Length: 107
Image 1 (cartoon, rainbow, N blue to C red):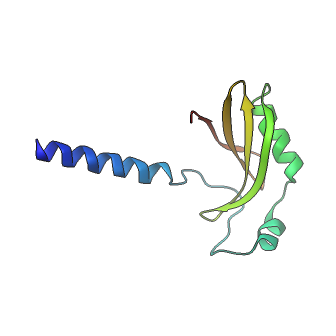
Image 2: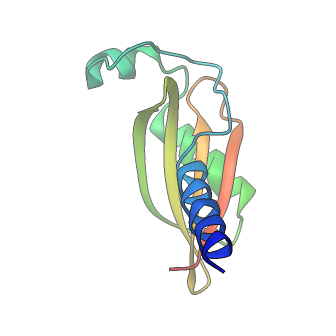
């Protein structure tokens, strides 16, 4: 029984660690932790273009927030949309407007 509980605990912790891991690669990459101005200079699309790409992916979505981010070396826009009663989080490549992630937040 103790082994089973240990295994369940380990699998739960491993799952939480993997949930925070980025499983995509953007077309714009940075090394280290550059400042916001450097990150902004690396983008090839505007915040408005990132918003449009996200809204095209979720046509019924209402824009809530857009932010530029350097996520593990990936320069991306994080876009939040209200999709009915749910919050949808999209990650848009800051180089080519490709949708890298599209998740429904059920919190």
